Every structure is written in structure tokens, then in C-alpha cells.
Image (cartoon, rainbow, N blue to C red; front, side):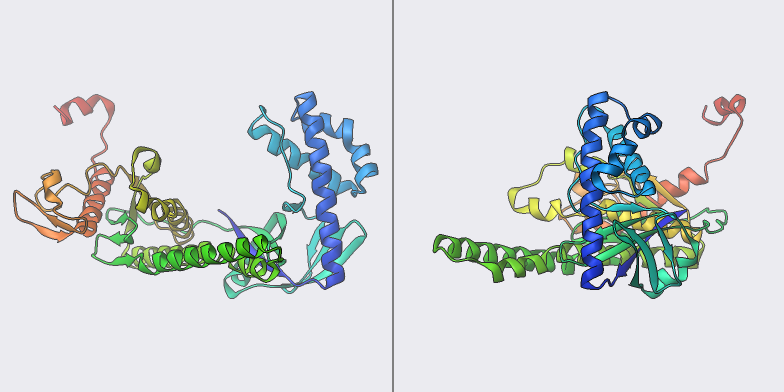
Amino acid sequence: MKLTLQTQLLPTSEQAALLEATMRAFNEAANWLAGEAFARKTANKILLQKLCYAELRERFGLSAQMAVRCIAQVCEAYKRDKSKRPQFRPLAAVPYDQRLMSFKGIDRVSLLTLSGRILVPMVMGKYQQERFTAAKGQCDLVLRKDGKWFLLVTVDLPDGTKPPTTDFIGVDLGVANIATDSDGQRYSGNAVEAVRIRQHALRRSLQKAAAGKKRRGLRPKNIRRKLKRLSGKERRFRANENHRIAKSLVAKAKGTGRGIALEDLKGIRARTRFRKAQRARMGGWAFRQLRTFIEYKARLHGVDVVLVSPAYTSQTCAACGHAAKANRPSQAEFRCVVCGHTDHADVNAARNIRSIARAAVNRPKVSEQHQDLLFA
């Protein structure tokens, strides 16, 4: 499977200027080429290279391979939606392949710029170092809003060996509890919500102060710098929590020889209405990100992941199977009106998810001519 490792570059001010100039030239060239591709209604790399390669190099100063990568980048973007002309931001990521860059160990990388190659120091964490030997193919050069440079390195790792799976850890996804498993463990969302509220209040206060300064004819440079430092802080904290939860669930599944069963929540925002006070919290619910983290970590460790329908899992009794809205007297409480079974609502839902996954995996497999006898 393919993973992307984030490594930080530590260029000098002169090197950073060269990288930025290269990035701006590449994206300016991509914007011009996107207009040519849109005018001709073609995403054919061979045709665009024949028509525009020489002008790309002459007009924007790109090297031969950079011009080739620019053509490929534009064609890939235009193929996604041929009804509109692709637009490239001046500081959008720039692809670097093995002809444009080379690693000099794990602490330096040689990158091609408009003025030739430069050797840039590079740092990475232990996680990246363990997987760095599998680096393969294209990397992306990225300049973040805070002025930091990163190289996103693609690595190709083998999937883990999967043993036969007959049991699962059911996982119920939510907001108050980000995840709850069928063993009864709950991963609270209180820390994420506290960060969201604090960051929202701080941004609002700073924006109000900046607006006040502007009205008085002052330049709120210090406030803008503070807002820039805050940018992405909530998102990074949320991603870290999701990584932590995913790692814990996968480790538990691997250690007990089970798979992981998740709810398929695709389209839930479109089919669910929220009160105004809930919209900001629900808008930041990163259930898709958590699912992605679980899936790729599970593949690395040979753990099966299955998706099940979430329909009625929160209203169905895990003990007797009776389903009714009356089984949920409150958001967190489950009490079956038939058998009297009580549990935390999220734990009960996770156990239902586990049961659905187990039933699907352990269903007898029979030939088509015998299916009518099995289900008669």
C-alpha cells in the first residue's frame, strides 16, 4: 500500500527564495497551460507536450523535466472536470520526481530549482525514518502558510498478512464520544470540543480587535500574525486525536486476532438536520478522517476492516434484538422496553455493529443451486 510521509525541509533564506521562485514559476506555467488545454478541450499529454513544451521552457524558464511534470499536472487536473478551466494558486504544491530530486541519506535532499540544484537539510520523526527506505516515485514540495517547507514523500509498503477473521471489534462513531468499541471502551470527544470552543472564541476576539483597529485607521499587524499562528491548530489537534484513537483500536484488534467493524456514515450530513447551536460542532466532526486512519493502519498490520449499515443500531437492543425509539430515553442511555437490558447507548450500538459484521462474515457460503434450500 502507498503512504505519504511528511518530512520538514530546513532551507537557508537564500535556498527558500530559490524554492519559492521555482514554485511560483511552475504554477504560473501550469495556469497558462491550463488555459491552452481548456481552449483546445484536450487532456492528452502527448498532444500538449508537442504543442506547448518549447513555449513552457522559453516563457517560464522551466527545465526539461519540470516542463514534463507541469504538463502531466495540468492534464491530471483537467481530467477531473472538463467543464471548467483548472486554476493553480501561485504557491500550490509542486511535484518532484526522481529526475528532479535525490535523497542524500535521511538528512539531506537535492532539489532542482530554476537556478540549478540545491542541497537542503531535512528532518523527520522516528515513524518516518522507519518507513523512509521504501520511498518511491513522486514527492510534493509544499510551502505552508507559516513559511515552513515540507516534502511529502510517497512510500510503497507491503500489506500485513491477514489471518482468517471470524470476530470483530464493533466501533460506534460519534461526537460526544469520538469512538466507542464493543468491549465498552469509550474515546471521549471532550478535549476536541474544548479546543474547538477555545480556538473559536480566540479567533473571534482577535478578528473583532483587528476590525476595531482598522476603523481607527491603525494597522493590526500583530493581530494578523497571531491569527496566522493559530491557523490550523484546531485541525492538527483533531487529527492527532484521530491518529491516537485509530492506533489504539488497530493495536487492540491485532492483539486479539479480530477485525474492526465500522459504521458506513457516507452522506450522514445531507440526511440529518441539526439545531443551530449544534452546527459548528457537527461541521467539525471528522468521522471520515478517523475511518481513513483506521483503514490504512489496519492494512499495515493485517487487520480486516468492514463497513456495516448504521441503520437502527442505536435503537436496537444488543441483548434481545428489539428495535424501538423508546429504547433511548436519553442521548447517552439505552434501556430496552421489552427485556429491560440497560447499557450506555454508544456501547450498545457498537455491540450491534459487531453482531452485524460477525453475521456477514460467518454466513455459510453455498453454491447457487443450493441457496434456495438454505433460505427456504
